[in-house]
Image (cartoon, rainbow, N blue to C red; front, side):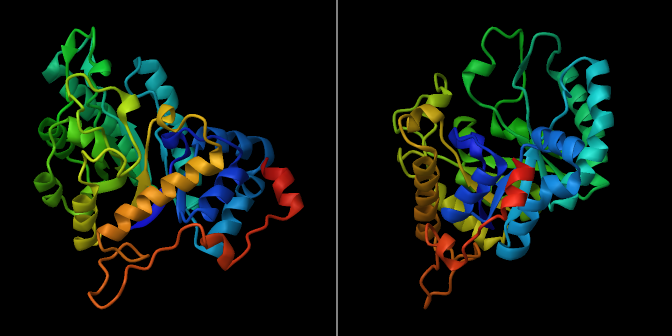
Length: 325
């Protein structure tokens, strides 16, 4: 497994070049790409110009485009769903060419229209259709659990918001390229345990998101602004989870996450640095080496954090910078 940056998951935004530069500087080996924005660049400038900066980072520094959020309104009206689904194939083709292996979308934990069994069937039909398109480009669909009460408030029918029914839903979709986004924060709020994580195989996990929560957090009243960087709250055992991922040789992305409010007042660089340092601390305590594997007992876990940028200076040519911005 490898360290991955999801800029929006820590409240960071910027131009593609800036985000890649920050990721490389603070020890990340991949990042999630905003595919809607990227496709706008492809349509206006061409694929080669839009991807030149990314390709340079991939070739020279083994930097990866890990995945992207699903740009399909699959929970919307049929016409909107079909319109977006038709656009997904060419987008997935471009994403796959960039090396992306995952596409992510949350399970909505409540509905005003559909009762539980109807919603179950609805998810099977819509997400199955999405997964079929992605499968043709060797991209997995990662489903994420949403356990915060806010997303169920004032809704007529509750749906999946706890780990057990979430895993059942993913399993019963019956599609080979559908797995889970293992978000430790929502996993904890949804009643998930380390034991359940240990029952997961690497093929079931599309992406891992690591965070912490305050020790006094109440799952029935939890809010997103209680999502803290790993190791900052003392409530979520990310170390055990990461150790298990090392044991089963999970090879995908691992991303630190935190609500932007918990990082208020910091510059973008400082936020990315703190996120990298928090993930590195968990990584080291779990006994992982730089490749995300359990280090032999005689070896110290080898980490690369802010020193990564010093290994090889990554400077984009001026003409490329102008094209991709």
